[in-house]
Image (cartoon, rainbow, N blue to C red; front, top):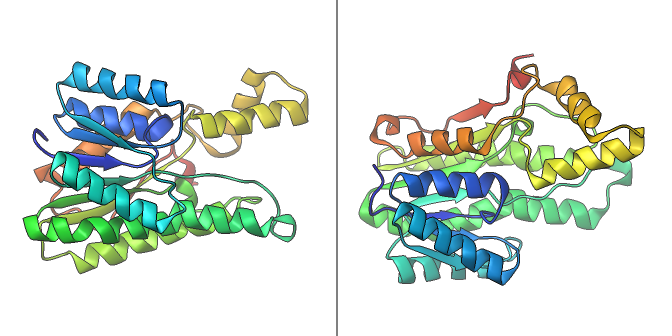
Length: 260
C-alpha cells in the first residue's frame, strides 16, 4: 500500500516508534530512523528492517531538542531517500514530580522534545509535501493529551499542545492531499513505562508483576497494555486512501482510559 513512500519516524530505535516504523515498512514504506542508542545496534536494526521488508532505510541521530538538527535531519532524509512523504513525530521523554517541585530544566526539555520538536519537523517537511500535494503527518500524543494525571504537568501540557498543533495543521492543509492526525496511546509497555513500573515496585516494595497490575488498575480499564503493533497498524491506516478525509483527529488507543 505504501510502496515507494518515504517515512521519517522520530524516536524510532525502540518502543512505539520502532513498532510504527516496522508496520510502515511492512506496508512497503522506506524508513528513516531517528533516536539514541548504540551505533552498531542501530545499524543492525536498519539492516534487519531493510532485509525483512525489502525497503530502503537510513538513520539520523538528531537531538530532538535542537531545531537546527531537526531541520538537518529532514534535509538529509530528502537528499538520501528522495522525500519525506510520511512524518511520524514520536520522540518523547518523561519526568514525574509535583508542580512546585518540578525542575525547570526538566520542564523545558519535555516541552522542547515532546511538543516543539513536532512543530520544527512539520515546518521542515511541509514544503515538500505541499509540492507533491500528498503527505501524512502523524503526531504521537498520549491519552495525557486528552486527560490529566497528577505529577506529570509538563508531559500533560506538552501532549495537550500536540493535539492542538495537530488540529491547526489539519486546518491549514485541509484543501490539500496532506492530512495531520494524532494517536493517543494509553499504557504501552515501552522502556519509558517500564522505568515507571520499576520505580513503583521499588517505592511500594512489591514485585514487578504487582507493580504492573497496580499501574494498569489505576487508569486502564482493559487491564492490559496497548501494543506497539496495534499502534503501528493504526498509523498504516492513517496513511491509507481510506483515511484521506480524517483530518485533525485524535485517536485514543487506551483500553478505555479516557472513557471513564
